Length: 109
Image (cartoon, rainbow, N blue to C red; front, side, top):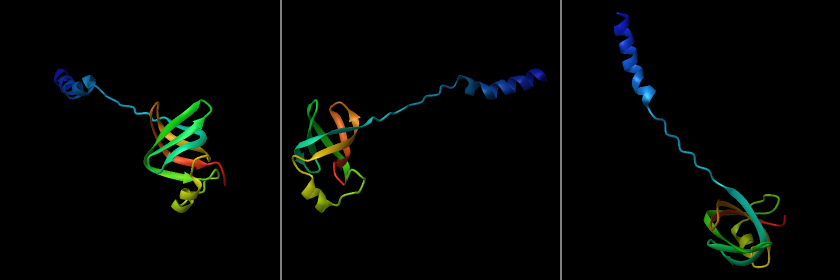
């Protein structure tokens, strides 16, 4: 009787003992860059003159424009204040040449 009971327990537990568990980890790098705007195409590209030289950033699907204190800017303010010569920081996701900006921070309040 013990052998039958043990066989039944092993038959139920065996598939779990040899099952493989697969786990995928995805990491996202979030970083900021800063400099003075040298080129700006709304909704597309912003080029900043950084200490290491010019760097091109592409815009993601949605970009939020804010002041240094975090106040969100509306479209009219963005059109008048975001232009060549303005110092900004950009918050982006990705690495190397594959970066997407999701936030532009104007260096003012």
